[in-house]
Length: 218
Image (tube, one colour):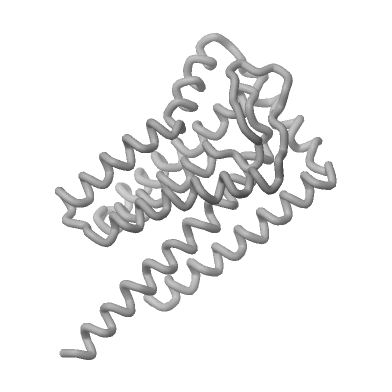
């Protein structure tokens, strides 16, 4: 079963890479505008002062400062409460790698941000969304690390729901506020998924190798 779990991680990572490539090609050929416009119209259709305050809050939740605070708090919890050591390296690696990957991909594709109906200002290129990549990486890896410590099915479902909620709301906030296309969000999810599952694959292989080495010495 361990081997199956490890193998599935790299398969999902590769599938995410293929999906990202497909979206990048559609953007390059300008064949994704219909999808982008439809989703933008739907999201902006709920615009109000109340929703603007909600989405400004969630876009702040996805900022580098807030993500750093949450990551630091998570590291303290993992170390002091759960007694994790090597998991801290995984968490830090996923966060740093996600940022580096996002900056690299933005520099490669150089997609301009939307220019109409902006509620807030943002700098830099648009594809893939840094907020979406950061949220997926942070809450995704936290869900992975906390999963084994939750014994009840209801608790694990709640973990996935909460993680998914924050990932979704942070991402939708970027569309609502007019600084990203929906395809930026989809690309961000897939790029981050590729990186996160690859990191988990390496982590699980390392742990399995060390366990096998320990058993062989007994």
